[in-house]
Length: 115
Image (cartoon, rainbow, N blue to C red; front, side, top):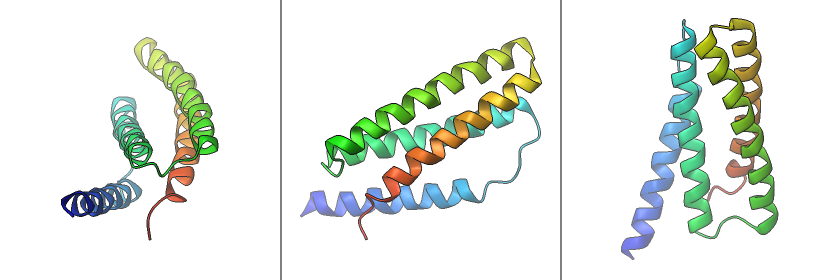
């Protein structure tokens, strides 16, 4: 019974984090934009690990998530490198790609939320 309470707690926590991320104000510097992305990335990755541990993900879901996280990681490398060298245009392109892929991962995980 304790495990069930923990799972509901985790689900409530994930829902709270998702709603907080959705209402974050616009950020004004590249470093802040990168930091906000990293928070969202860790949240989605933690949720994916939790759902995998709880056996909510099918083999197909895992394959989709692996593909999406590969795209996220590639775009993340691009925008982090652009941040270091100060290439704003490349940063904007990379972070936009990473956010789009991250949103795809969120959609996959949202389908697996317990109602």
